Amino acid sequence: MAQKRLDSYGVHRLILERNKKKILATQDVCGICGKPVDKKLKWPDPMCAVIDHIVPVNKGGHPSDLNNLQLAHMCCNRIKSDKLFEKRDFSGNATVSNRTLPQSINWVEYRSKK
Image 1 (tube, rainbow, N blue to C red):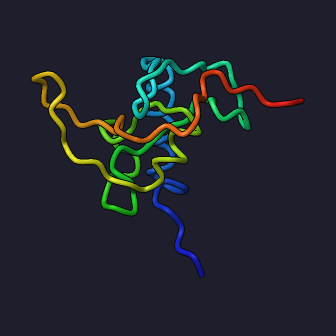
Image 2 (tube, rainbow, N blue to C red; image 1 turned 135 degrees about the horizontal axis):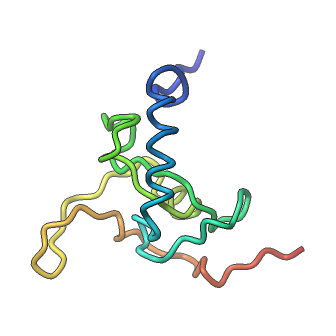
């Protein structure tokens, strides 16, 4: 039987929901690709807003800590999956970033065929 994730029930779930609201209220840019996130888009649109764990829970990341959460596009979060990225130097500033992911499609211009 599959083990439940810590952020899917109990105390961590309540804290995660509270932190999701904070992130949606304060962040506007995808933490993975660096492009703006349109919070009006809803699932299943690939550009809808989701909350990403910077360090994945299955790699030891905290399931509900605000410092381990960031705003992301659903498609970027799916591509990132549970990968970890090294600390990189961007123009002199020491920054941890997941923006080094390859982009196979320009999701900003993506429109579903209805």
